[in-house]
Structures are given as structure tokens and as C-alpha cells.
Length: 178
Image (tube, rainbow, N blue to C red; front, side, top):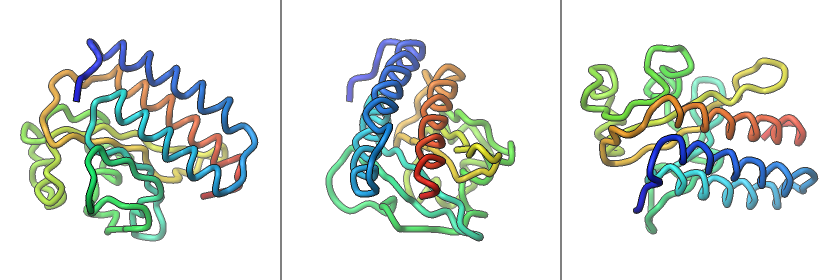
């Protein structure tokens, strides 16, 4: 999958995608919202050159995958409606600040490489930001990962992903939840 030339150009592409999504989904029905968000997430994943992107929701002690975009066809353990223990996830650790929001190479992080999910999903690099609703509640996370290490990932990608998460949070707030 070809990658944009730089982290800054990826951030600019994410900003443009977020602006288009905001305009296109200002008023939408539930089924249309899901379809629009799925297409939006696929564009975000492609702009970052990642293998999987997803929106998760924290429900009790579970991380529930709500919207998922996968680069390849076929079954994936990361699928809408699937869930796993929040305690075993990158998501919880990133929201708590125990892991950085950009992990260009999971093998270079003792905590990330020790997680069973790193091996199970073959995570080589990871980006994640919390989705924070207007009332301050953390809904869940917007995450993407690649099976390969990505030394080019950095703070600009995190900032671009945060802009996208803000758009998603606004959509959730408008719709009154997931």
C-alpha cells in the first residue's frame, strides 16, 4: 500500500477527509450514519497507510468494536460487535497514558510487545486517540494499526487522528450515543 510522502501530508489528508465527513453527515439517519462512518474510517485508514482502523466503545469492562475498516478481505478478529477485555487492550493503556499514542514499532516497547494481543493480531505499529464526548466522558478510542513497524509515524499523525476523533465525537454527541 503506497504511503503519503510525509507525516505532515498524512495529517493534511486526514484534515480534508474530516472536513468532508462533517459536511456530508451533518444530518443523518442511523443506518446512513453507520455506512458513512465505515466509508470515512476506510479513507482514514488508507490515508495513514495502515492495515486496520477501528472505533471502539468502552462498555463496562469490555472494548467493543463499533466500526471497523480492514485493508484485506476475509475474516478478521477485529470486526463490528466483537469485544475483548478492556484490561488487555492498547486502548485502555493509551487512555491512561501508560502507552504513547503513536507506537511506530511495537517490538521496541516492552509493554506493547508483552501484550498477548500484539502477537494475536500481529501488531507492528499502532496509533490511537481517545474519543471524548462533549460531557467529558471517554466514549472509547479511534485506533489504527499496521502489521509492519512504521518508523515514519509520529506526533503529526497523532494530531491528525485526534482531529478525526473530534469529528467522530461530535457525530456521536449529535446522534445521542452509539
